[in-house]
Structures are given as C-alpha cells and as structure tokens.
Image 1: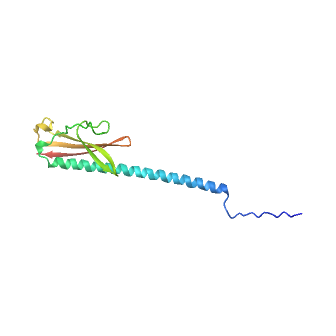
Image 2: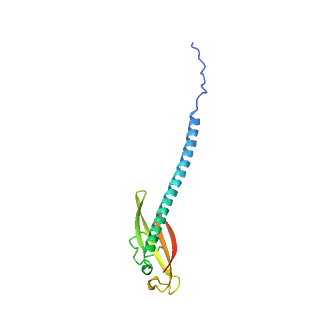
Length: 154
C-alpha cells in the first residue's frame, strides 16, 4: 500500500478573502477621492465663471466712465434672446464668452439713478448719478449674479 504524505501548509501568501476585503477597501477610498476631485473641479469652474463675470462688469463700468455725463442712461435693449437667470432685468446687453472651450451667456444690465433731482438719468437735472452694473449667468440650473456700483458726478 502507498503511504499518504502529509500536506504542507503554505502560510506565506494571502487568502482569497483577504484579497477581496483589501480590494473593497481600496475601491471605497478611490471613490471617495474621485468625489473630492469632482467637487474641486466644480468649485474651480464656478470660480472661473465668476471671475469672467467680474471682468465683464469691470469692462462695462470702464465703458460708462468713458462716456460723457449726459449720455449715461439705463439700458433699454431687450435681453429676450439671452438665457438670463430667472428674475433678471428684461433690458441690458447679452455677452457671450468662452470659458474652458465652452460658450456661456452673461446677461448685463446698466442701471442709472440720479441721486438728486427727479431720479431719471435721462433728464440730467442732477449733479450726481449712481451707476450699477449687474451681471447674471446660469450654471448647472443655478442662477448667479455679480453687482458693482459707482457714483459719477458732472
């Protein structure tokens, strides 16, 4: 008869269960890191869109500063062709910009108010005008605005 030889146990490696548990842990950590990266990318994009809105507001304000005092009036052109945030002004200027190779529409509105007189900038019966530039845009279904204001004297 043949003798049965004892089997040698090799305890130097990992069992299948240990490998599966380690894989699941690594996968969970990877998903958490991916979620963090996606949030960072989203925040970065929102900051880039906001920076572009600030630039557009400054550009419009500089254009107003170059105008003569009597020619400064509130916007009257319609914004109906621009995809403005809900509740945004109905008049203004639509400005399209490329941000990260994607086109975004920014709705801008110039609002002028006389600080004395009848309050209407078109009548020019006061020495000071308050000029407010509002820029609005949409991103991922949310509405955003940026507002700057200055006072201009005659």
